[in-house]
Image (cartoon, rainbow, N blue to C red):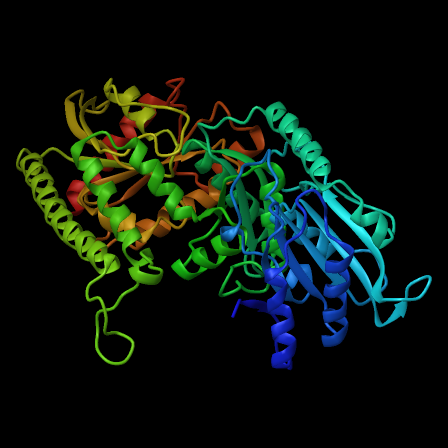
Length: 578
């Protein structure tokens, strides 16, 4: 028996058979429906006293029958044909409605989410009525024809704390009440071909860059997060997406008392995200927080396009930035550790190992094979990272035998650490106004002349990977060989981008990460960078809050001599306190 979807509770077997027989109906390809089919559908709906929806393809075949409204019976996005933004789905829905009113917004939104060719709404009577002139009893009182119409995409920049982005409105057309006779005379093929021609012209006019992901950001703020901090993190997520090579189309926000355990945001917001993504032509959804494998799966099923979290974006950036063998090794390890718990299977790919009822069958399947292969690769990479740790440890021991003090440059990503290293030591480390431009640690000697004694003093400076709010745990583990450069250094130079609006929050984030390291780092000197771009109020606040800090502009080479002398003092202090 064919599957009937929706709410079947309380239905008799005879009523279910009547619904199943709708699958055997075939409609003319050039007509929305026929009078006979519409009246039969209305009679069944009246008999069970519930709305009924039938989804029909362009060959006139019923492919889905459901009891409920279009919203309740809609086809999951992943089961719909994927034709692109210039095409409709090739499916129309004929729905009955017990109340004498036009289709509501929920039904029209469902039409838009599925990109239906058309939505035909039949308003029915519960008892039927005699047609004019006597004869057959009819149930359809009036009908409405709805369909999508092309609309221009809204260009939406990232939000600022004082502004809200408009949500794009999907355009649709709803006819006035129609008689069943006039509805059945509508030329369906002419309607669809005309609509798709208009959608095609709009699609070409958008000039979509297929080389870049078109991204919709989703941010969720809970009661324990300040509004300013939330906006800063959303802006940072936008920078991360752009650094990874994506184009941010719009930001969707929701305030909730707590995170929804299944979909992070509420059910209505999921529908809004799906509709907005479709309207803007997005092909990727990025959330501002880590998602569980189940949450990703639930969201992708309901939205119909790829969903990733913040950690996956950061891992993608790291994969692009890694240049050395050590960097690529650590990135691969982090990606595999992130991927392993997210492997899922469907049907024959699901796990069959174990014991007891339901686990006997084909033996080891693709899921176990993939998991075992990834686990073996992780073990091998872990060994190589351990060897890398040992190698770098030997290099540090050689420096310590030569009694050369070491100072590690730490700080938030894009704070200017590599630029400062280049300015102090004439190194040629790659620098760019990008997040995570540098992954691999670089060590250089710096000779400083002591102003008190006039003698030269050598110290070693090491540039390290940048930090970020809520640095993913998989990265912390994979990059332990790199982060050991921080914990094993005699002292730290904490570089801060003073021109960034959230510079104070970034200081707290870096100090929080340092406090979580297994070995307590040495003494820290704060260097407030990019003072040439900071305003006077920020400078005054920083001077009052951090009077012992050094104020510099590495790119303009401002304050570097003062910094050199402070580094020398820091190195002497660190060595004498060991």
